[in-house]
Length: 78
Image 1 (spheres, rainbow, N blue to C red):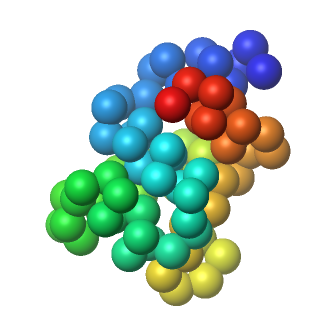
Image 2: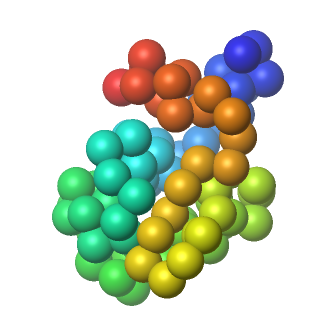
């Protein structure tokens, strides 16, 4: 969990907003709405979370946490 705490502390505000939204829904449209972002604003952060191995897209329109237990850390820090 200590490693996850470090990851969380190094995330940008928008990365955190998206992560918090991901704890409520896997649907990209819901995540964008909850994070207060449009598609063009959301896409770079989505790509960055995927590139860093924090998230993955199991199918079109979905975004899920890649790291086991990371959602729980996000919920604790929300």
